[in-house]
Amino acid sequence: MAIGVALRKLRENQGLSIREVVAASGGVLDKTTLSRIERDERGLSLKAAYLFSQIYNIGMEELCEMAVNRKAKPSRPPFDASATERKLVETYRELNRKRQRTLDEVAKGLRMLGDAKSGDESRRRLLEEIDRARGRETP
Image 1: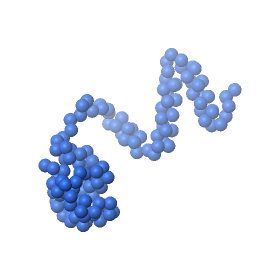
Image 2: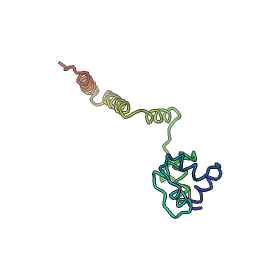
Image 3: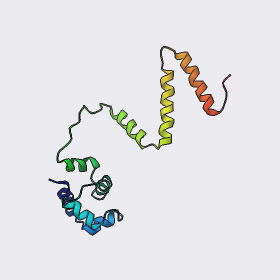
Image 4: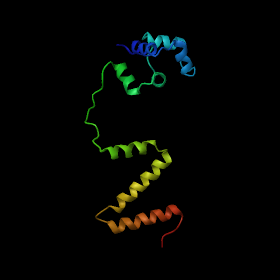
């Protein structure tokens, strides 16, 4: 099934008119563009795909699969992690960039502390880095 036909079916199944979808897009999509997409006379831009995913409440991955008319097969096995590890990754992804960078620095410091070959030197360098970050000089 072509992406346009699938999008039209989604719209109709949700009882939405073309005008309602245009309004829901905040005017980004116009009536002509929407009609042409549904008739497969126009390609689907990333912006339009995102708007459709939000308006029709479907994931971008599902929309992409509809566009290529098949389910994607992962090239490698999915990351095998415990529920706790998956939750940690999910929480990290929800952080803003500044907090992610802070957490990255903490992780870097912990790796330095865990360095078995030069543990004492790593600890000293880490403490120096922390002191420098706080604006203090190390003796």
